[in-house]
Amino acid sequence: MVADVRPRPTRTRRPPDRGRVSAIILITLIFSVLTEVLFPSVVLRNLSRGLLVAYLLLEWPGIQRNGRVMLAIAGMLTIAAIAAGAELRAAGQALDQGAFFATFFANQFFLREPARSSVLVRRCASFFIDQPPARRYGLLTIGGYLFGIILNLGVLSLLGLMIRQRNSLAAAGGNDELRQVRERRMLLALLRGFSATPLASPLSIAMAVLLSVLPGLEWVQLLLLGLTTAAILLTFGWVIDRITAPRHLAHLVPPARGHRDPAALVGLVTLVLSVFGLAVVIETTASLPLNRAVLVALPLAGMAWLGWQYRHFRPVTGGRLVGRRLVREGARVFPRYRTEIAILSSAGFIGTMLSALVPPPVLGAALTGYAPGGLLMPAFFMLLVILPALVGMNPIMTVTILGAALAAAPATGLPTVVLALALISGWALAINTSPLTASSMVLADMVNRTPQEVTLRWNGRFALAAYVLLSGWFALLVVILRSQGL
Image 1 (cartoon, rainbow, N blue to C red):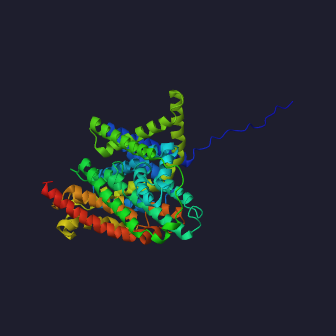
Image 2: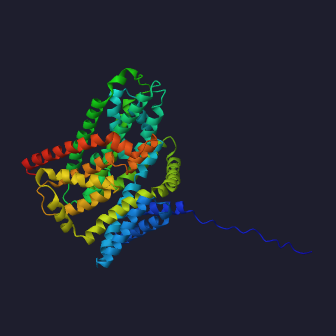
Image 3: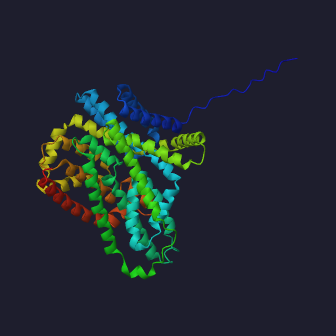
């Protein structure tokens, strides 16, 4: 008999897909940066640099054009710096800043994930939308701001989708003109509320940027005055909405339906304050700057929130379910962050590397030399953030460069906090006006409009008037702070 010598099927191990590998790299980057924040180490710093580069190289095929352009600029600046004889240490510092910004953004996942399945979030979203017109604008503005702190751009998808669903032709009583007016007013309320998050969120990347590049800037003063400035901006938006509301359609508005739950708003505010409070505790106990403390607080707060959703299970089972969900959803979501991380990390890199090519004192002297003197200077710096955003330049890069330049500029005679507020206010107004920001594209896509229509056509006059108003506010603020010797 002849033995059966049929070849046995061989098992070939499938290589891991790119998305899973990049998710592992990004998760490792997050924990490397967080550990280095708590326990400074050259090894961890170098590891974070390498992980950031590896993630961007691996995800390069999927990065959108604006992210690729930013990375190309970062690469050209690096070549120019080497050709100019700059020290390699400058590239390392630029990568450190890029890794910090990338981690700051990716860390938002730990709040977005529990928010996705939170009953509180759904109740609160319904509360903001199911209101009569007189209250809806103000509450949607507050909702855009509060949810923006936790969800960042995710608030636009969450509330934007609910606006589209609740604003059907039937909900408008069959009147298409009324439906379009409601759509415009609700979207603008959401956009204006979201635009206040750079000004008034202690968890925003805008504050993290300025606290890292402007020495001597106190976060308590910046946050309090930022909240005041945001209140002025949002109240002005409410006034404009009331003035421009079409009175001839008022009698056609059907009564608001749905369950309105004010307790949900209290719960959301409590959640935001709890996350911020945890960051302050970490800042105090670990002697960290607030922007670094926020990095550590976000994952802890997010995992605690997610764990609360599994509180009906036994501790071991609940912990295992939380861990599985974070791993599963992280593997799904982290590769999708590729374009945002490319933009944010390269913006931080460019701002730092540019300082190696053009010394900040030189750039700062040029800026202050061309800037109008005295009380008009904050208005000038607001404009320097808004105008580049209109042609697609990300505000984070503009603010990073301007902040570093102003830190090394000759004395301007203005309080540092006012200059910081001017830059962040320019960022907020850029969100309101630029059709090239992610926020305008997300909202426009939700309602089948163009970004130009949502920003420039619908919101342009408000933004221009708000620019004038904030210019006056900053002039008054300078006078007040000078009188107090600050």
